[in-house]
Length: 112
Ligand code: HEC
Image (cartoon, rainbow, N blue to C red; front, side, top):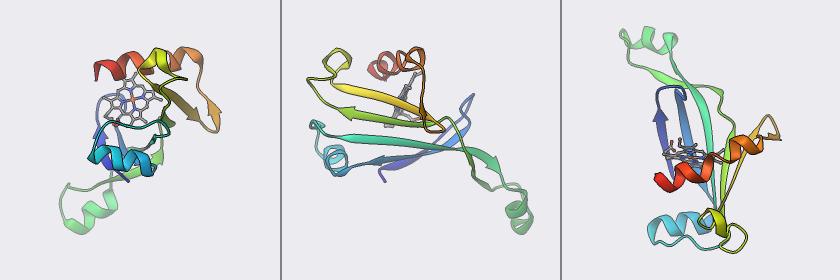
């Protein structure tokens, strides 16, 4: 596990970022070598009525159902030369997302 994050707006999720060994080493010392894999898992970000009752105030948010699919980034400088060396894939319920969805990944990541 590399980190966790909470995105608001239409995502409204809690997400975990996972990496293979190459990814974890490269987060400490760039650049990311070919073979790096980074995965993003996300869950609905929900208020817990049960926990709030125990705390006596509104303060608890927890991971609900998985949402927004599974996303992976794979580094291969040759294979993915057109998208800055990164390949992108999103999987929903075991099925890859459409080409239209995949076309959005690299342009936004370049901005980010
Ligand atoms: C609108 C911009 C945008 C689009 C489109 C987008 N991403 Fe991202 N992505 C981000 C940002 C910003 C982060 C870092 C913050 C976060 O994790 O929410 C991120 C994080 C990730 C991560 C976790 C690694 C990291 O750098 O934090 C993966 C894996 C990922 N995206 C894959 C994808 C895939 C696959 C697609 C296409 C299906 C995609 N993304 C589409 C902006 C985007």
